[in-house]
Length: 154
Image (cartoon, rainbow, N blue to C red):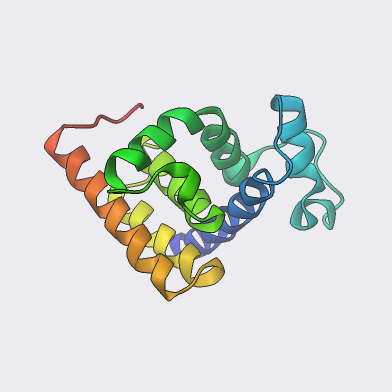
């Protein structure tokens, strides 16, 4: 029973991370302090009275995805056949960055879970077409990870 609560908590943390990272597409953070401000200003965080220092799974996803964005975009570009990162919709790109980050940088998240959670985020924030697009890229990245043509960073 506790595991289910943890999964639900992680799912809501992913949704929060998505929302903060998506917002950064329109108002980019120039440094870690601005990233922390964006996180603390998020309605889900500020409604709880904010946090003096960002902590928890959502913050780890936000900071890790933001910090490794260039490397994540290179992986996404590699598997998004005929798509440049600049042409991918902001919702889809944010979901892809989060899921690829979890796949490559989080030892506690198996690739299948990262794919599933990416698809769940696309159901919540994207449309039907984005699900297939996201699934295709994440599946290709997972297969490359399994084959050893890309490596985990943890």
